Amino acid sequence: MLGKTESVDKTEDICGLFDDCPYSVLNFVKDELMVVIFSLPEDHRWWLEEVEKRPEKTLGLSLAEIFFSEHMGGVSREAVKREETPYGTECERCKFYLKRCEGCPCIFG
Image (cartoon, rainbow, N blue to C red; front, side):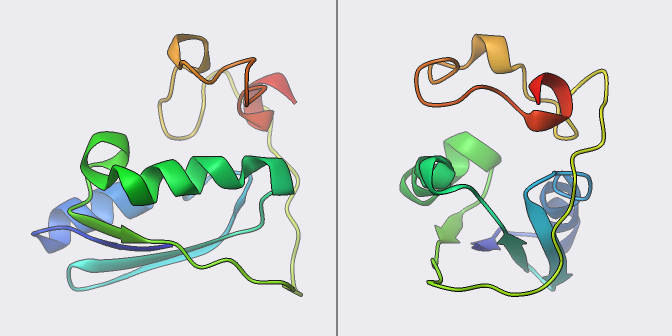
């Protein structure tokens, strides 16, 4: 995912939300741009598609572009169990919870 905001500070804050995300393989910021590389199950692609459709509402980005790869090699991560999601989402309040998503694997996995 490529994302953009109007300030470096805001971009760093949003990108930092993914530091402990179990699906985030790599994330970094350059000026007002951020890149987050995810390793997602196929049935979770809708989440990134929602971010691309509504970047401001979902993450506070002014722009988001999503690119899907047919193959990605490299490191896999196991979710670290936590009391709350690493990005502060309340899964139970999301309209997609238990319909399209079973919740963050840090909590429910």
